[in-house]
Length: 93
Image (tube, rainbow, N blue to C red):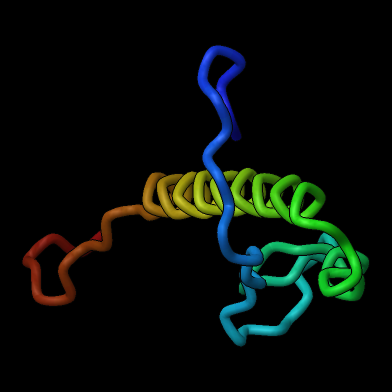
């Protein structure tokens, strides 16, 4: 996204699809590979580059959110694990 104070960078090539070949819908309906919605995937070839930029920015936000959420889930899972006692210890409870 161009800053208000800086001129926008010129685009010489059409923006490529963010598809990485992992075409599965997540729980909220976004693709697990590129993080586009069904409509964004369906109309990608029909929209202009300005709209594609908006879609790409939304995909980046969704990906960052998913990564933060996943790392938070992993941290909470590790916090919930309890230390397992030794099978061969002399302490019999």
